[in-house]
Length: 59
Image (cartoon, rainbow, N blue to C red; front, side):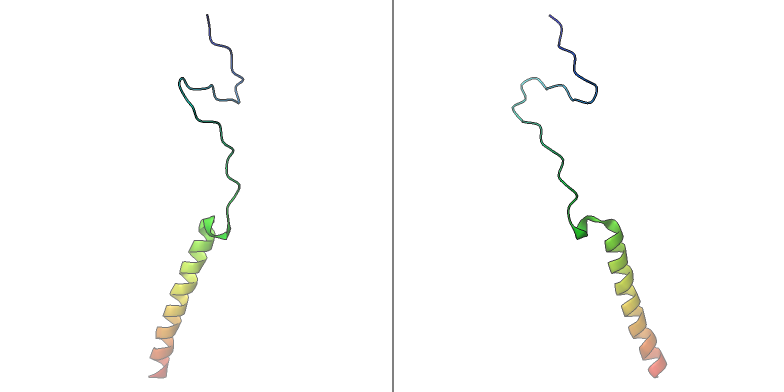
């Protein structure tokens, strides 16, 4: 007997698998976006650089 055909968009079930299919998690939060982390790092580096520039100017 042949295996039943599975539509192209679906994954065929694995033999012996007891796991149910799960839905993809929705887009998380603010922190899962790499662009945010880049801007946090750039802003921190700019603040540290401004501190040293201010000390240099104050001499």
